[in-house]
Amino acid sequence: MGCGLLAALSWGSSDFSGGVASRRISSFQALILGTVAALVVLVSCAWLYGESFPVMKDTLWAFAAGSLGALGIAALYHGLAIGSAAVVAPSSAVVGALFPVIFGTFLEGAPGGKTYAGFVLGGLGIWLVARTAANGEGLGLKGLGAGLAAGVGFGSYFVCIAQADSSGLFAPLVVAKAASLLLGLVMVVLLRQGIPSPSKSPAALLAGVLDAGGNVFYMMAQQYSRLDVAAVLTSMYPAATVVLAAVLLKERVSGSQWLGVALCLGAVSLIAS
Image 1 (cartoon, one colour):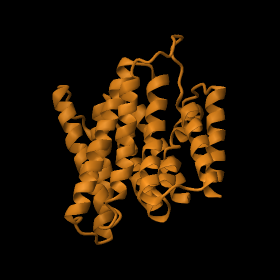
Image 2: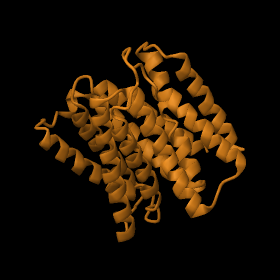
Image 3: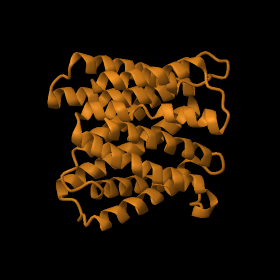
């Protein structure tokens, strides 16, 4: 359980840093810089631990994971551009958590009653934490499709990368991040955006380092627990993002978001029992 929570903390902090970076450069440019930083960390760790290139099966799973994860990010960005964040962000977070639950049930059988209750409580907590103001407009359904697609991308990443752990801890993540970088470069070319200098956005580089940590902790979490348990725990990352924004940026956090944080903590206790 500890690794899953550390993954959530790392990914939530990474999202916060990436959001700060996206205030100065485009989201896709921040994604590229972050991915490069993550690759430097992961390649260095793979070399230090003497991990070789993954076998073909793991390479294919890792490449699929990186590609689907990058597509999930692209769908999320598109949804936020055309719709309300109050619809897009919660739907992507919840689907990203529940997709591995469905897969894990077929792969490993149904979990216990308390675990299921934790999943439900955690899903509700994720939804509340991810909610943002809708600028006074009705929530509507605009962007919902993109949010659901993003969630499928994130959930697919959880499932695929979990199948690629037989070749080590870091090597499969290197392949996944290489695939993400490739797709990120394609996006920048299509949008005719330049590739910024690393010195232009230290926050994007920090986001990449934290993202690398989140990936490593997630790989460790799914090795020592059920896939669905690891995915739900790590999908609680919005809680860290909300807390950091409230403390460091003095952003207003609604009562429903704080309630979501509390529900996530309650879900952890149920899943761990």
